[in-house]
Length: 415
Ligand SMILES: [Zn+2]
Image 1: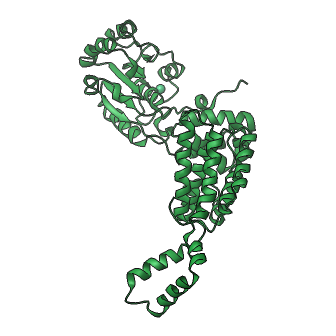
Image 2: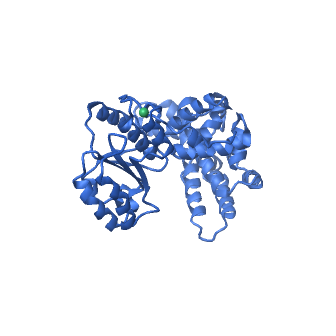
Image 3: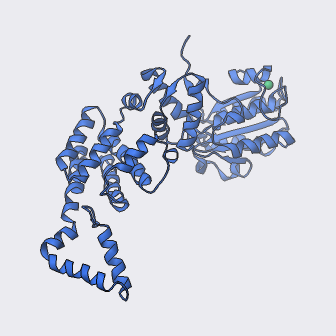
C-alpha cells in the first residue's frame, strides 16, 4: 500500500478534530446551527494552523446533505465530492499562483448561477493577500452584493496586506499559533491510532521544531517515521533531523561550570562532527538553557514537556549556577546566535569558540569574593564578625551583605 503523508491522512474532517482553534470552531458551529451564515469569511493566521482545513470543513458543513450541526457526515455525495476536491459547487483558488484579474473573472463567472447540487456555491480563496489590486476590485462588486447562495471563504497569512475595503465586508477569524503542548497531544493521538511507539521527549522535540504549525509538525513526523519506523525515540528524532543530542548540552554546561574552555570547544567539535550546524547547535542550547532555568524555578516535567528523568537531570545539574548565571549565559548565546546568522562573513565556529571562552573565563575573573579574600582576608573577617555582633540596627547593609554572601560561587558579577 502506498504511504500516505500524515498531514493528508490525518487532516481533520470536522471541527471537533481540529487542534487549538476551539474558539473559531464553536462560533462557526453556532452560525450553522442558527442558520445565520455570513456571505464572506476571512481566516487569518500563520502557516499550517488549519485555515484551509477549516475552510473545507465549513464548506462541507454548509453543503452536507445530512444537516448535522456538529460535523459534516462525510458520507453524502456533497461531502465526498468536497473531500475529493471535485465538487462543482465548491471552488478552491490559490491566489499565490493566480493573482491576475483574468483568473478572477473566470472564477467569478460561475457565481451568477445557483449551485448545482447543494445549498451554497462556495469560493475558497487561499493566500488572498496575493491577489492583484485589479483582481480585488473585480471581485468587490460581487462581494458587496452577493447572490444569497454565494459564500466566500478567504484565507491569508498576511492580513495586513488585505485591502481595508475587503476587510470591512468579511467576518474575520484569527487562528492562533499552536503551542508545543497542543501539537504533542495531537501527534500522540495519531501515534496511538497508527500503533507507533514514541517517547515523550521525541514528541517534545518534534513539537518544538514545528514552531506553532501543525502541518510542519506532521511533515517532520513523516521524516522521523521514515527514519525510525514504528518505534520513535528522542535519539532517533535527533539523528533523523540532525539535531544535537541533549547529552552534549549537559556536557557543555559542566565544562562552563568547571571553567573549562577547552572542554567547551570539544563539545562544539563533537556536535559539528555529527553534522550539526553551529546555528542549530546554538538554538538548541538556548532551549536547553530555558528548560534548565525553568527546572530551577520549579516548573513540572509536564509543563516543560520533558520526561521526569530529564527534569531530574536538569535539577541536579551545575549546583553552583543560579538563575542569574543561567540568564547571563543565555544572553551571550542569544547574541552569539544572532551574530552567527547575520552572515557578515565571520566564521561562526570561531565566533562561538570566542564566546565560549568568554563564558568560561570572564566569570573566573569576575569572582569578586575570591579576589577580595586574596587582597584583604582580614577585612572580610571583620565584616562577618560585625554582622554577628550587631545584626539589628544595620538592617539594610546586613541584608545586602547576606545577599552577596549567599550568592557566592564562581559566577557572580555581570559582564
Ligand atoms: Zn455530508
